[in-house]
Length: 338
Image 1 (cartoon, helix red, strand yellow):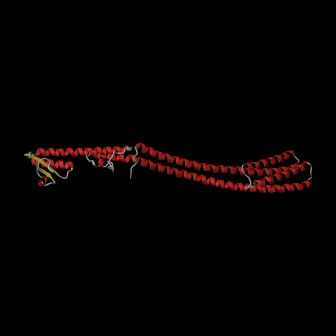
Image 2 (cartoon, rainbow, N blue to C red):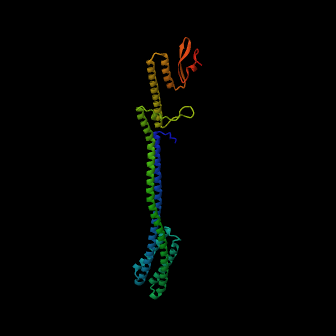
Image 3 (cartoon, rainbow, N blue to C red):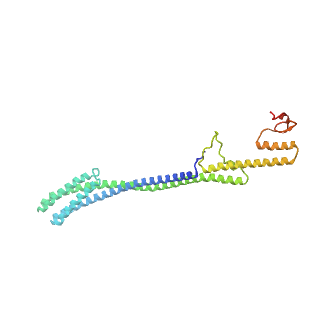
């Protein structure tokens, strides 16, 4: 798996950016759900206002009928004024229903026609009472007014039933949206926390893992073990050329640390070979022994496959030590052997 070439700051910025994006998405989703709930609650409130308006209309119609009959019995100006005020309240209540959208489909149109019919018949009844008509003369207008009131009451009941049904649906939708908002918010918060924890863990691991490797390699190197430090070296490039720049500080530090470990190992190997060569030279004064021991160390240090040491003898080169090569194959001759 290819590691991202990112510095510590870039890794932390990327991690915090992802966490911030998760938080923003969570808050945005919660706001959208809350806005939906708020819209449903407004619809529910409008339904409640319509329900109260329909009830107010029903009460005003009843007050109009009661005040009209009282005026017929008492011939009192107070009851006449009450009947007029009840008519005005009924018209106002119906007008408010129409303004709020109680239009055809809820029965408001029928209610408006029936209300005017009822009020007109009531006005005619009041005028006859004011003109002094007797009870017999009032029977037919009163019956007509009662019939129209009953039809109006039935229309208002239908209107109330329709409004109540819509209010019930709005209430159920608002309740379901409220429960969904709570569940979605909890779920979104849990998912956001899990995602944030995962991002934080990955970001921390991206910094901590290479740092731990460096610490382990440093401790092993202090104990004389070059392996962990050398393992930090990056793979050799496929094609020769300048090394690409590295933005990852930890990777660059690991590469530098591996190069330093390789140089240290090479230095220790050279010093060890020099020491063995010095001991070999001090152990004897025989040219053949010195040449054999020196050749063994030089070949081992250089990693050569073959080796030979020649001694200048009366103008000729004579092989006195060989490595992986018979003395006869080394040959004799002037200058460097072929």
